[in-house]
Length: 289
Image (tube, rainbow, N blue to C red; front, side):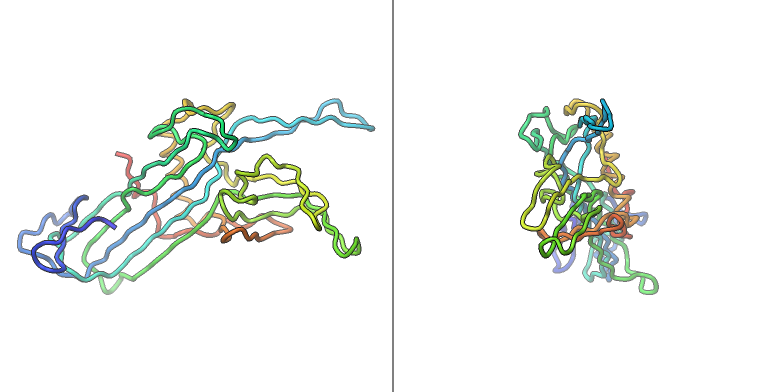
C-alpha cells in the first residue's frame, strides 16, 4: 500500500507519491471517509530452461537411432498475485488518489548449471531470479455504498506442468499401470516444477516406479528466445511484454494452480486445468514510464 504521511490531526493522511483525481487537491481541509481503496501486486519467480527436440535417423526394423538437441530457451515461472478492495475510514487531504504499479527485478547471471549467461539488470533477466512489485497499484476515492464491495483475491499459479510416461508395478506385479501422467507443479525449484531436475529425463524412483520419463510442458511458453541464450538477446520491451502477458492471464484466471510444499497432484487423462487467477487484477495498471 502507498506510503501515507500523517498530518497534524490523528487519522489524517497525505499520500507521498502518485496523482490526484479529477477533483484535484482539496483546499477546504481534510476530507472524511469512508473510502474505497484498491490495491494489486504481482511477484514472478522464474528460471530459464532449454527447449529439447528429438530427431530419429537411421531407422530400421531391427533398431532406431535417436538424438536429443536444444533449439532455444524459455522461462518457467511461479506467479503470486493479490488484489484487494477495502472500505477504509480516516481523513485524507485529497478526494482521490492514483498510483500506478511498478516493478523491479532481482536477476542472476547464471543458469541452472552455474554457467554465466551474461550481464543482468533492467534490460536482462539472466538465468533465474525474481520480479517483484516495487510500488503496488493504489486507487482511492469516496466509497459508494450502493455498488462498492470489499473484495480480496489471491492466487499462486504457473504456466507449466509435468508430463510423464509411467510404468508402475504394485503388489508384486499383480497390479500394473502404464500410461501418461500429468503433474501439477508445486514449486519453481521442486522436481515436479522442474528447474533443478529438468535434465533428469530418465529417472528410476524406487520402490514402486519401474520407469518414469519426465518433461516439462509449457502452456503457453513464456519469453522464448531461439537458439543459444545470452543476455544480449534480451531487451526491456521483451521483459515488459512478458510481465503484461502474465498479468493478463492472472486477470483472465488462466493459470494452473500450484500445490503447496512438495506435494503433487496427478492427472492420468488430461493436463491440469488453467482455471485460477485474480479476476479483478488488470495489467493495464502496470506502468513502464
